[in-house]
Image (cartoon, rainbow, N blue to C red; front, side):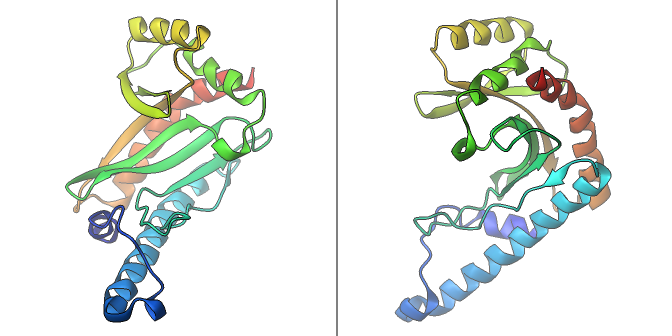
Amino acid sequence: MREIKEYLIHEGEQYRSPEKAGDAKDRMLSLRKKGQVARKTFTQIAKLFQEMHSDWDLHPTSQWMNQAQRLRPHFWAYLQADGSVAEPMLALRLYGNTNNFGISLEVSFIERKKDEGTLSKQAKVLDVPVVEGIYYWVQKNDESYRVQATEDNRQLLRQQLSSREIRKVLVKADVPVTNEESLDKILNGLDRSFEKLIPYYQATRS
């Protein structure tokens, strides 16, 4: 995971084509190499996790830079078991910074693929009682924030969704990663998160 740790340092930096970067050519070549290697590392983890759950199809990993050509180290990859791409799925997502990072598993949806029923299906994650080791990720007015998963907060979020005070709620579980973390330990952590989140995913299918 050292490749990801080293790449996280560059979050948000501007990338330019090395051929057009002048004196910054070598730096741009280095950033591109780091982005490609870090993305490959994340993709390998996602593929190994998918092999543990072979009835799920793995979507491609996000690119290492966005449309504005800024570095985007927080890769993600969706896993689809059934339904359409407009419906909630599971997603693996890198989080954190170079000093404190990991991979989260979440019940969420692809924003650009959503249809008129997506948000109401996603909201059903709040129909399921909380379990230890999860949290909510709430979006309000284009800003997102973490909410502790308690029964009181679950009921409050249901009310806020109903009154349209908030737009969406994701359910997530984090697997912290250190330099010394073995791949097996990371995958086992993701698998435990999978077991916790499956009831929330299943709620979105009803």
